[in-house]
Length: 249
Image (cartoon, rainbow, N blue to C red; front, top):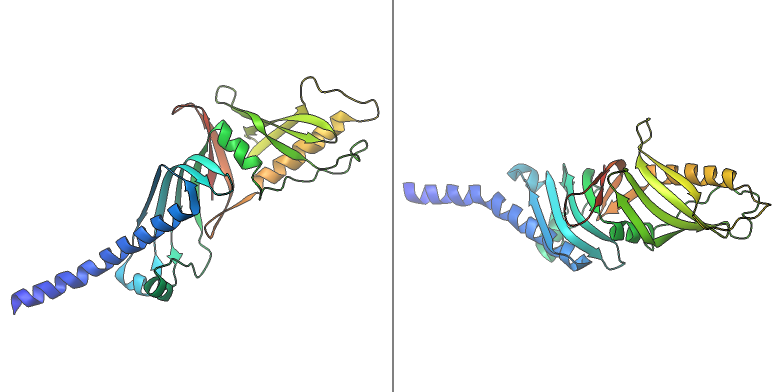
């Protein structure tokens, strides 16, 4: 009958929407399980019915606030978008688990407070660069970033943080570069740091500036199977406290 035919058409057209909602719910649940803490997680996705049968969905946008990972990585806010994801539909149906069949390409905007940035540069998986060997640096040639005393100053456009190298404490200022490079880090000896006559601190500062700038510009972030690199940055006073916005793609 006409009523039965209409009901069948309605069920057929609504199925992709329900499946899309189901995948979105799985993504949110998976993120919440992986996070130690969060104040908001949402996932919006678009899925064409034909593409969905092939395991293709997109674009997919994930938004969050107050995220904290099990290893202490935190962010004030995040918004990540992937144009297309390829999913293992069999795993979704049998295990209700999202599995990417190929790495996804996307872009993200991450807002970090001073505390978040300190957690970021001292994250266990973060390995600071090794500057070139310089005379006087043989005692401790490893660069170690410090979590404490990070400052985000939108008025000057700089994120200030500290580290230790060659037995000395160094101050680093991260700024957006206008000259072709995405970001530039200037290293100087921290105030009050004692010096030695046999060490060329100017050469050391230049080497630290160059290697940390290159390191930051070529850093790759991994967000649940999506690999992103640094693109741009800006500092803002919006919100309860200043933050640095990192654009990744």
